[in-house]
Length: 169
Image 1 (spheres, helix red, strand yellow):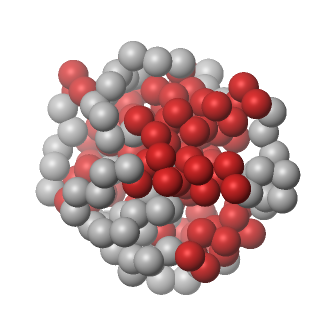
Image 2 (cartoon, one colour):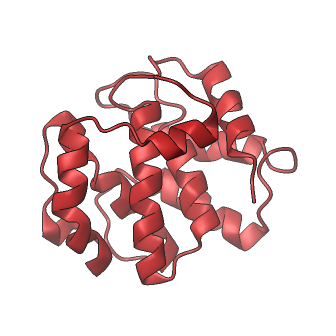
């Protein structure tokens, strides 16, 4: 397993937005919890899903439209390969593609990529959007929609994830 605390520290050392912003640490933690639940159901690669939660918005430069931020997040993960990110080429490609394409609205892909995309989409309530079931990739995400939406709209702080990361908000 990866040292998520060290990865988060590397991300935050270069993160240009407020860590408590709409695309910051609380969002990443909820995406992590969403992704874990989806992966448990659809057989996705849990390690890739968890890394996606950390990297997908890690290189945003604004809270609004930020074209290319997913690719930048995937590229940042690539820069940490061999030091903090330890995935073989095939698994890393899943992570990179999930990050790169996570805002494109796609629904068809590998089950791991689908779990990544859905884990993020389930947290749209934080910005006032109720995800549409037809835009979710997996049955697992559709089953989690109301639970995840309540947490997102209330800006729930997943204490176990934050504690694991060594973050206090």
